[in-house]
Image 1 (tube, one colour):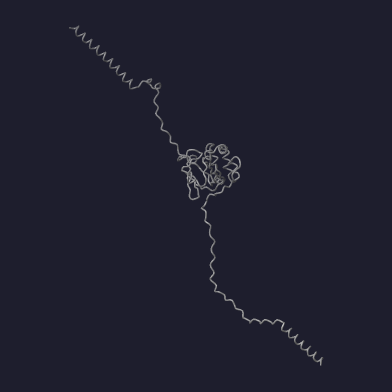
Image 2 (spheres, one colour; image 1 turned 180 degrees about the vertical axis):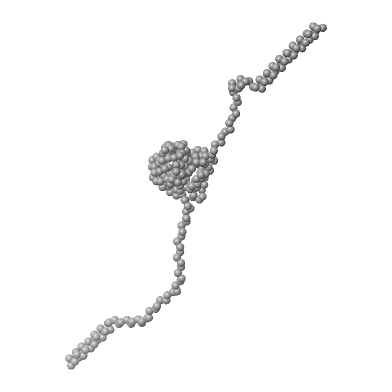
Length: 288
């Protein structure tokens, strides 16, 4: 009896243990419903815009002068020969500056005074374009005047050329018509130079400080006085009075001499007439 009761109790315990184990296990979550993937709708494409053209930079006028100088400011004495040598392409102008003595004069004035200068330096090709023998045919004085004609006795910055009054005086001297006139005009940032024989444009800045400005020109500036001088008008000859010693009358006026001789003749004839009248009266008295 006891055995049967223990057997039934053991069966009941096994059953209860099994039930508790099953209840203790978590229940699986229900699987979500299967949803078909939504296809994305493609919006209508707008027409493609044409590419924007690149902006065109503003064009500079032809032969516009360069603002920056080719040769930096010098340390120590200002020497135009050294400046032009560093710039390259000005060997003929350098040779003429030396041979005429103008380079030495400029060196002394630039370094021993406050005088400023502006120099128009022709490139070597400018001299090559001249007629053969043009420079060699000039006298020493004319070569000096030619070089001085390229120099203004004041420092003119690029923005101040429009303030100059024409004709502009140069180191060559007289700026009147037919001598050494130099005319400077501006159009925007372009500077034009005219001598009456040559027209050219400022090509760029070679050197610039507060006392000296050197600009490039593509032509030699030919002054009228040297290459197209005015014909000299001959002065009318002056009538010289005859020298008294050289005159045939020995310095006495001919008319005066004639008048004097006439008066002497009249006096002589008058005396003879008086003598004749007296003699006639004498003989008439004596005869009576």
